[in-house]
Length: 407
Image 1 (cartoon, helix red, strand yellow):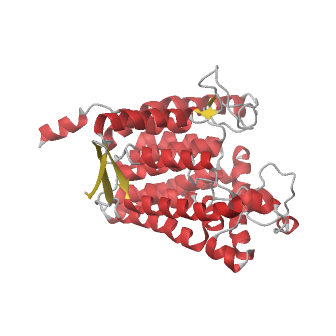
Image 2 (tube, helix red, strand yellow; image 1 turned 30 degrees about the vertical axis):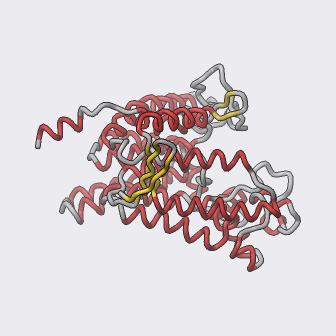
C-alpha cells in the first residue's frame, strides 16, 4: 500500500497539470491579435490528441454546450453568428475534455503551489508599495515583449493585483490553491493565501475566503470531531472581520460588501443588473433568450430604459453582468436550468472537501463574469479533476472513425 502511495507521489508532472494554473496568467496577453492562452490551448489539445487519440466529455457540460450552439444556430437568422466566439468555446470544451484521467490532483497542487509562491510574492511586494510607500501599482508584466488589449493593463491604481489585470482575477485564480491546501490541512499556506487575498481588497475574494474557512470549520467539527479547532477558526474569523472593518486600507472592500443597492452603480451592475433585466424582459425573451448577439447590444438597442438602472450609452462597462445573468438573458430559462444543473452534477460527484471549491464557483457566478472565458476554464478544470463518478463520454479517434462509449 505504501509503495502505491509513493508511486502516485512520484508520478511525472504532465503538460495539462502545468497548463491549468498558467492559463489565466498567459491568456491576458496577445500575439497577432490572438490571446496567448488560446494559442497554447490549440497546442495543448493537438499534443494531447496526437498522444492519446481519445478524450472525455463531461456529459452535463457537453449537453449544456450542445444546447448553446443549437440555440445560437437558430438565433443567427436574427442576429448573425459569432464564428470566432464559437471556435474559442469549442477549444475550451476540448481542453476541458483532456482533464479526466490525465490530471493527477496531487501533481496539480504541487505545480499550483510553486506558481502561487511567485504570484503571492507579487501581491506582497505591491502591498508594500501601496500601503507603506503610498504608490500606485499596475500589472506586473510577465512578457515585456507582449501587450494586452485590456484597459487595466497599464492602469495604475491603489490595489495590489500582482501579475493579474485586477484584484478579483487574482483572487479567483488563487482560490483553488486555498481549497487544495484546506483539503491537505496546510494551515500555514492557508493563512498566507488568505492574507494575500485580504491585501488585494477584493470584496469577492474576501467573501470566498470567509466561506472556505467556515466550510473548513464545519467539516472539522462534523466529520472529524475537532470542535475546539472549529471554534478557533470561527473565533479568528470574527477577530479578522473586526480588524477588517476598522482598517482604512480595507474600507473600499467593506463598502462594496455592505453597500449593495441600485444607487451604487458598480455593485448593482455586478450583482443584480442581470436579474433586473431578465425580470423586466418580455416573456418570450425569458423563455428563448434575448434576440441580440450579447447583453451590450440588447442594452444599446433602445428596448432597455438605461436611466432606470442609472446607466448611459457612454459607459465602458455597459453590457457587463454576472455569469448567471448573462446565461439567463442570452439562453433563457432553459439555458439557465442546464447551467445550474451542471453545477449540481459536479457538486453531487465531488468528494467532501472538493465540494468547498464547487461552492465558491457557484457563488462566483452571482458576482463575476465567469461564463465561457478563461476563468470559466480554470474553474471547471479544477472541479473536473475531483469528480468521482463516471459521467464522462469517452470519444476515441482512430482510422478516421469516431466511437463513443460510457466510462
